[in-house]
Image (tube, rainbow, N blue to C red; front, top):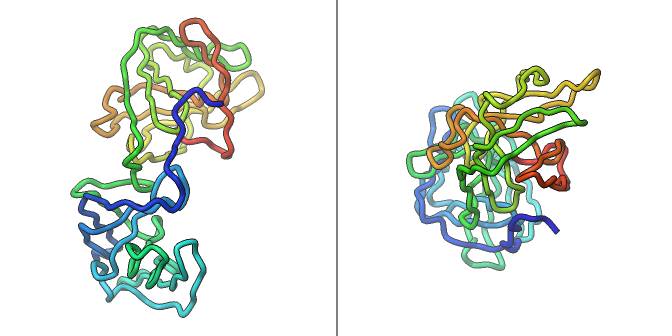
Length: 258
């Protein structure tokens, strides 16, 4: 059993989105709505379902195909704006066992150039309204090793507690041994933290362990305490907190979430 709160939202749960949502493709606003719905297609986070009446019909191109979904048969649409065409980008749900979902559209996240909640851009996927992400300063000593090699230790970490994920320990860069770290070109984004500014692989002897550490120089305002600090994947390194070794969390992904 993990030592952090699990995500408990059931699949197919539906709730209203109280925020204005917009998304763009090229120069066009594909939709602009204050009546979207959250739909949990899996427990970790929801998708947005948008009333078709709030979608610019000029950008929708019927593909003449349908698919079955747990919420009813969907009609597939491409998005076309000028010379830009994104195939299978939208799924229109005319009827559903849940009447709240009648005449809604679910868009593929990567088919659109940018998504906005109110006037702030959202990255990767919708934020889960039932998840908390807290960055708390601490004086509990944290030590990070890999294969017996010290990578960093600090008595002033910032701990990030995120629903459904193990605690992440962010250490000041002055307390990281960068002689074992090699800068990587990897960039990832998080709906809650923003976009990473640095990634590092770890070199231990002849072995290179890809992309084990990362940093956010410009995180979202809610996560400002982690700005410029460095964290490691608990799943792949050994971490001690208060002198007690932590068990490595299990992951079902090739690269776990931060």
